[in-house]
Length: 225
View (tube, one colour):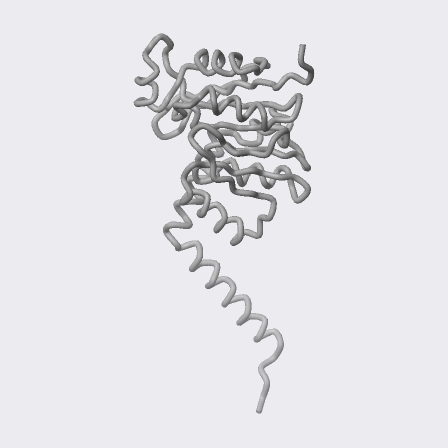
């Protein structure tokens, strides 16, 4: 029996690898997910958001109302193996999707949390940053949620609210229907529940429908007066 030369075997290996890669790239669902993520990165600027919040390797952070986990996985990459990301949502199917993706990608620093409508059920005084992105406007039990978030943050920890802009002065039910909320309303809610306003950062404009978002940051005071 004549063995093929080593370089021929290597060539076959390369061809098989390329074919497998091409097959994966032709997966429509995978392509859609990749494209959607890249498009959102362009206008959401996740690295700038995390920089503004001082999120670094070893940080403990919570993505409240995490949905499909867009920020969850950006956060997991940023905080690294010594950090922790709590991915919270009230929809178990969303959390199951995140666990499945994390297992597939070998991400081990994400813990999913099944929250309630009035409580994200985060560990007390456990996190450096809580992010609520495009979700606060859905929260009918907003005072209870903010109280729970306050308890979950460490002293000096930050709360980031990123949400769709709306004109002030309308009934709150109207904002729920429109899936957006005035920044002033969210600021008043946060300050009423003990948070200190820190600053407003440059906002975002979604690429597909030009929806405008604001980005406001609050602090759980390091000391009580």
